[in-house]
Image 1 (cartoon, rainbow, N blue to C red):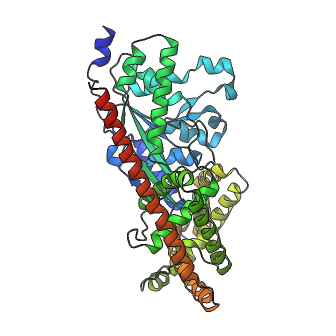
Image 2: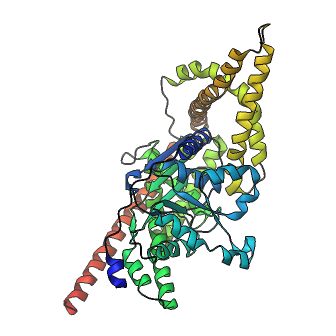
Length: 485
């Protein structure tokens, strides 16, 4: 009877519309994220199931910012699981309640007894049984490592426990990778990459059909491992920060100097290239250590020359646009107005974030901005309205003009800053490049030599990987011949 129930078709759950509160929160989150990050790319969003229970699993390297990105930029708004200690920050409570965040009562926070009295799996199963989507971070905590931490088993247990309720839910696990080029840098970029949904029906059948603790634990371990594998496909992972920096520099150089990998502003292309280089680098370190070390030494020497000249790897081939100067000139008035009206809250929010843990700096800056910027706008508008008051009363026209102008001019000021940074970067690179060439240091030759070494390593990896694949296929054929079905 149990087997028939589990193998039945999942019940159809209608698509739930976002409430007015959820629409407002998503809009607010997008405004805040757009102000901090210069670009947020979302790829393969169509993979998010349109209805039914979905457990979203993501990497966790930027504290509360990760939760906001997952909640605000996916087709559906998943409910977040968050440590109960967040409710200790009183200003956050209204936002947490409005967003439907589900508290996790961890033993280290509330004690063993309280944690047992409020088990997380009961609450998560209830959310999934209602056909909602739920977002979790299987690493368990926010961190600053350049790779995924070993996963906790909670995500797998949530999905399996929900399916074991006998509701034929058809829970799908959806990996969503979050990649930041510089997560704490103002006006940096973010890539949100949605992976393929995971069908867990096989594991759910085994888990549901038995009460044996050892068997259930084995199923949970199996599913946890598969979730980590799938999330690794949509995230970047490096052994250490030294390797991460080297691989990023190598890919920037490759993209800037090769015809087949043209320089692009598309973050997905860069991340995919870095992921390919990371996989190749791991293989090359094992099979061609001497060539790899020689390339590392050459890259270090090249970077030393660039650093002494004020250049960066990705800036070593200057590019320009005839429109940059005109656009900057047109945006200059808005930059002056926006910078003036937003000077105080901007610098206070940076001060608030200063000295915090690296994975929490952006969170402190962004969430303090939710209070600082609107508060500053209101104060300025009131002062302006009072200053321009007439005998007939308060200057409401000036008040509303200031309330509209402050955020609008602030947004255009951000656009001005982004363009100015790129323009000055190219100008500085061009001048430094000419200075290096004039001093007798053959930077072009250095770059060409390094690029040739990278191409040689790429060829070694491609040919070696193909050979290994052919040997593996041959081995499979031999095994099949000796063991016919």
